Length: 230
Image (cartoon, rainbow, N blue to C red; front, side, top):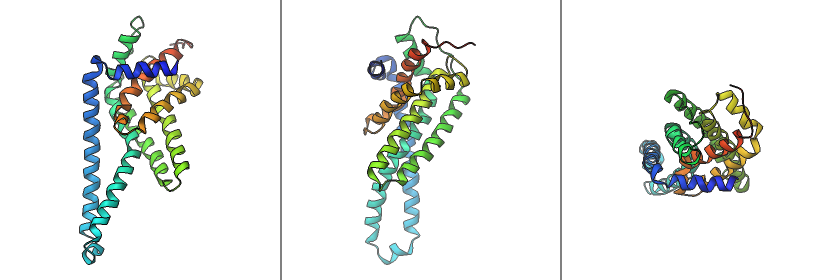
């Protein structure tokens, strides 16, 4: 069921109906990354311009720039989950609506969450993801442990957040959380697919839309097995 849902989600990401949202999602992600990159580079440049060591040893600038650039690249890998959470909060309802209409046409459509609520939810998740991934980054010099922590933590966080975002279109947030907890293994396994995509350069930019499409399918499958009272 899960791999079939993943294939359907990938098909949706590249479908004509998703194309407009895809470009908007990629554009917003790139803008956020560019702003973050420029801000951090400015900070490093400011430190270099005001550090006495570079005045005494001018050639050290090149090494510091090289090391800081590598560090920025690694930092971005760990910041991407938080950025995708913010991006997803803007497109969850449009993307989920397309998946529901195309793959579940006989089901009642979901109810979009208010923009403020979805944005706050995205920011909350982004902060939590940032804390967890910075902790994983702190374990950088423990390679195997670092990768395990990064993968497992993001599989859990991404699975939980995207599933509850999808489920909340059909039920109150507390019931969505209860459904997720009751099916925690299935949701975690779906999160593993998202975490795996997150680790692939370039393709990881598709994580928000893939996650939304995937979790619509996962939620539909699980919710057909369990009914909640309104």
